[in-house]
Amino acid sequence: MTPTTLAPTTDDFARTTRNLRFTALGGFLVLAALLALTAMLVIGDAVRGDGAAGGFTDAAFWMFPFGAAVGLVALVTPRSLMPTTPRQTLVIAQYALGVAGAFLQTLD
Image (cartoon, rainbow, N blue to C red; front, side, top):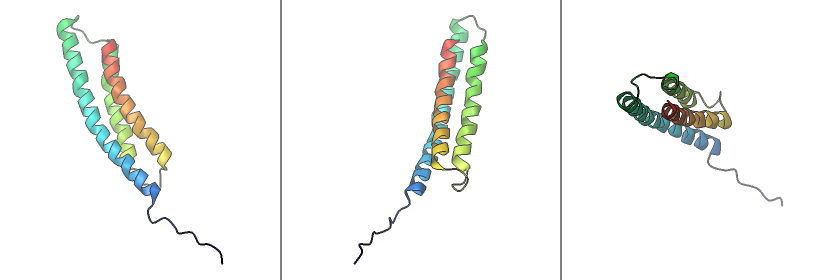
């Protein structure tokens, strides 16, 4: 008699994809909070500094649309077209672009 192995009842791939989609959705909230922080840094720099925005300010504000686009791709791409690893990379890039935007503003 050969031993039989039971097939798993849950799909780990589907669960991981769902978790990454929720993480990408939460990334939009993080991007909004970091955008507000960046705007406060810009206003503070305008009041205390020389009053002119530099190149880092432009670059900082461009990070947020790029982060939103990356997060949107990770959120809406069907599971059949994107494996877990690229989706995970896109979610990490979404958060990294938001942090980079706030960091670039501190350099100005």
